[in-house]
Image (cartoon, rainbow, N blue to C red; front, top):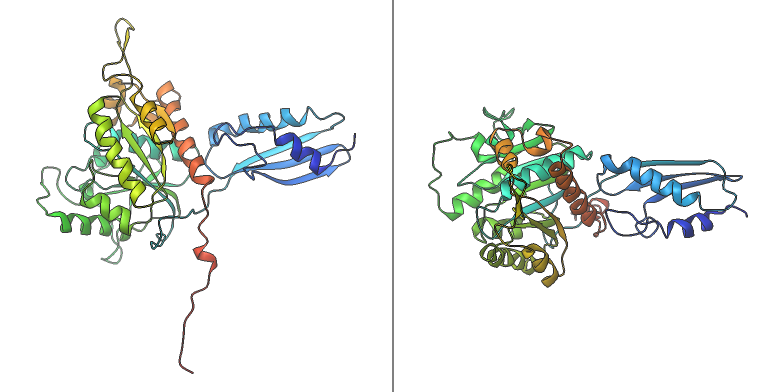
Length: 362
C-alpha cells in the first residue's frame, strides 16, 4: 500500500486529542507531514500548553500511524504554540498579553483565590508564560499565597514591574499597601485601581494572564467585562446549593456581556478523613455537574476538601509547587489544560494583522 498524505490524515482523523475531545486533523494540530518512501515524519503542534502530556500525545499519534499497512519508520515531534484569541467586542488586547482568563465566583469562601493561583501555576508547569493579577482590592490574598513580600520596582515612575514567584509574574494591591491597611474606597476608586494595576504593570510576553476576581457581580466584575479584554471565564463553586445559586448569577453575568465560559471548577467536592479514610460529601454532591449540564458548559474538574491545599497556600507554596506530582496537582493541571484547550479552539484575534489607517492632509 502506498503511503500518502491523505492516508495519514484519514488515519489521524480517528485519533482523538484527550484534552480537546477533537481529532488531531479537525483540531489542525498536525503539521509538516513528510513522506520518504514508506517512512513518515510529522509534527503535532498543540494550541495550548501541555508539557506533561507531550510524550503521551506523541506516542498516541505514533501508535495510530502504526496501524497503516506497510508503514516504515515513524518520527513524531510534538510541541505547543499559544496565540492570541478574540475577546468581547469593542475591547482591545493588552500589550504583551495574549489571553486573559477571569476566575470568578458568585460568593466568597468557595476557594476561588486558591484555585486561581494553582491554575496559574499549573499553566506555567505545562509550559506557558503566565501572569496572575489579584483583582480583589479589598481583600488581596495572592501575596501571601505566592509567598511574596516587598514592593514592586518602577523604572520610570509611571509603570510598575510585576513581582515574580514560582516562575510566574504577579501583581496585587497587596504589594503596594501594608497588610493591615484597609482599603476604605468607594466603587469608582476601586475600579480605577484595578485598571491601573492591569494596564500600568509591565507584563512580559504572557501567554495567559489569570485574573483572580473578588466574589460577586459588582463594580469590579462589570469593569472587567466592559473594559478589559477577557478571553474566557472560569466559575468556581462548591456543591452546596447556596454557593450554586450565586455561581449561576456570576455565569449569567459573563454570558450577558459576551465573555465565553470556559467551564466550572467544583471545590470541596468531597472530604476524605485523614485518620480513617472515610469519604463524605460535606457540602453536597454533584452540584457542579448539574450546573454545567444546565448551562451546557464543561465541568473542568472537582477538587477535594483537603487540609494540605489550605496549608500549602497559606504558607506561600501552593499545591502545584509544593506537591507537583500529587493527585491534587494532577487535577489542577488537567483543569488548566482543559481551560486552555477551550481557548485554543476559539476564534483567533486578527487585530494585529490589520494596519492602522491614518488620514493626512496632503
